[in-house]
Amino acid sequence: MGPPVTSNLPDLPRPNLGAALSRKSARMVALPILFSAAVLGLPFVSWVPAVDALGGSWNPSVSCGLTVVNMQDVLGSAYPSQSLRGSVYQTSSTAGGIPNKRSLSPPCSITNINGQAISSFVQINGVTLHNYFYETRDCATSYNAVNGGGSYPKGETLCDSTGNVYAVGTSSGYVHSEIDRDWMAAGYAGPSTTYDNNNTIAQVSLPCTISKPCSSAVSVDVQGFVYWDPEGHWELHPLTAWRISASSSVSASFSWSPSNPLIGQQVTFTASATGGRSPYAYNWNFGDGTGLSSSNSTISHSYGTAGTFMVSLTATDNNGTSGSATNKVTVSSLSVNFNWSPRRHNLGLPINFTSTVSGGKSPYSFTWNFGDGSMLTTASSTVSHSYTVTGTYTVTLTVNDPTGASGSASKQVRVTT
Image (cartoon, rainbow, N blue to C red; front, side, top):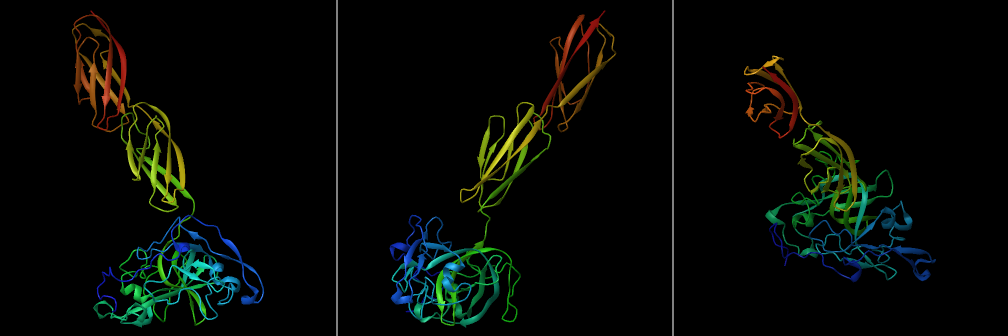
């Protein structure tokens, strides 16, 4: 019975965990293997790639454990040329890799020509895509016989999207890669997915037609099953997932606004992180004994005292790699001053007080303490007050702005008869 003809295919075969080697388990080291002279003519030491369980498949339809490899690992002793002989993925005198490139349920592991069980599902990091043809080759309207042979959903015609991947900075030693038409029909790949979108893998404007292939300098990481094409080259077919490569290190920086904050004023800190693998977690130390951990790149903080504070940010990526940055943030109080007239103060006569403020944000609130037990809060920068008893009074003005920043000034006023 062929695969269902809907895009939601829960009963289609999916790759299953096979041999213990292919299961997601602890990271293993690459082991040297002495190949038999009876098989290859002369003894030589090669290796079986190690299962890498720290990552895993990016395609939810693939449950196999994976191996992280490079071009030389796939091509073997023939690198940078293409040859079945000399690759650890050779399974017989005429075949290598998985037995059927179109299978929706390829084996997680294979047994190579020397009897070694190795993972058939691999990841190659840091490659660029060249000669990419978008859905123009090997077209069909039905599933391959290995997948039941039923018609594609909605009677559509689907084609492979194909190209060659090279290690970044090289122009030889490629692995051919194909996003398979049956996998697209099953919903395991194609534009309906975020992890194996054949529309965007080229990182250039489509279409990449049969007469105009696309190439890109953008570094990507790819996952897929190793297959030897009888036409004479190694493939990742099916190519099951890809993503933009990330640098191994994380760089962090941050800015803040306002650049010269005041006491009590909300300061907005904005973090920036590059490299590594997003998403990032941000850990802040504000230098005043407080801190904050957040998944948001923008946060707010206010300071209760004036001074210069060493603010530090640590950004940690999804792989646990971190980078940090530190800056000095200077916090000031509002600059407040006042004068009065007349300068000679006779008992019972009004005295006019005029304030000046710099910094902060208007409108301001002015609170006057005249030193004789009377106080006044006003929005006006100018007030009048009369004293009923002679003496020397300490007048204090406190100014607040809408952000909560404040400042004050005190002066002595002498009142005589």
